[in-house]
Length: 145
Image 1 (cartoon, rainbow, N blue to C red):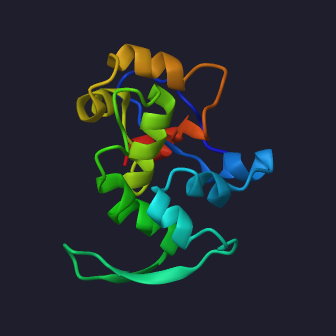
Image 2: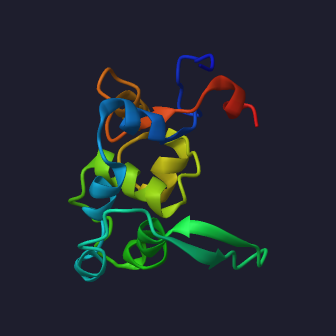
């Protein structure tokens, strides 16, 4: 286990897949609930991970990715109702991290992108006792990268 620091507004957060595993929750079931109705219909009966080839538009590198997550990233997250004013802060952060390929973001960056709440409120929400949807600070050694 990595060492942790007290998070501040520049601490990066991500969706911790280990949290989902330890809680005995199915990440993919929850992921499906964030798909648009069209993609939910397409993936309604897909219980297993189905990998697809994805070509990075900048590097042209081909990688295997979860088709469900990729649908969310390339289609659902582009729709105007993916994150709205009425979307809760924790759901907005979760959806942004999903759309962003789970690239860690700080409360300052989250505020800049989402325009919701102040970085201090985002920090207080994400670093409290309650862990929302596995959103946690990344370990200190990863913060330095």
